[in-house]
Length: 204
Image (cartoon, rainbow, N blue to C red; front, top):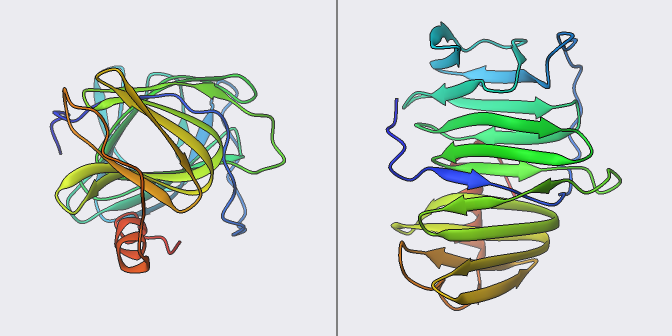
């Protein structure tokens, strides 16, 4: 599994859904989500105990989800907020409330997606590369062209570091580097967008 040299402390403010449909396993009484899909190897670490990551496994606060080099995973939090993980990625659900938000730690590639008609949630992304604030959006975070990057498919995002804040709208992306301001906002071209979403097994 990956080491989290690029750990992210995420907080976001709502996002838009992909529109795909599927039936969901029931959540545990104290659960905050479900592992919807898994391909390849992965781990669910709870209280220091490691178990194979499997479809239908309930997710609780404090759980750590890891994907191997050959794996993809799809998580659903409180039946509405979707997180797609790429290979060699890791997420720790520090805290999550359906209508209020929380804190999630992540490393690797992921796409965060939340239905437009759901109340916005208040999460904050902090990373060695800066802070990310997301409102009403579907967005990608992960490696792209050799750098950690953010791309917004829909909605608005702010990315801040080293005293500089960039504002992104749909179609915009920035690159992030520790200790440096985010790059200038640029419109991503279709091949880069497709490659980014492809890391987590999705199409834009």
